Length: 88
Image (cartoon, rainbow, N blue to C red; front, side, top):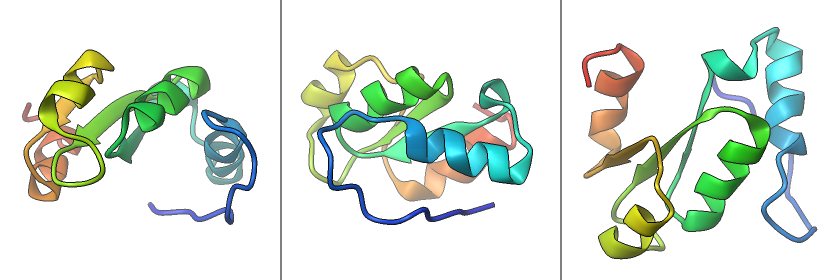
């Protein structure tokens, strides 16, 4: 499922948007993951208690994303489906 809550205009990382989406869908944080392309996205996912999927090719490079220690560091968006299905 995809849920959009709106534009954030506050200092990041902030996890309230993730938690609001999960509550609306009736999903516990430990059953969810957050996809992003920056270290702030990884920090935000940790604050929300969800797994982090960091995807290369966006705002940050591999070294920067690796330093943030995401649960998964993916080469492309195409790899997300394999992670979600539990193949990686």
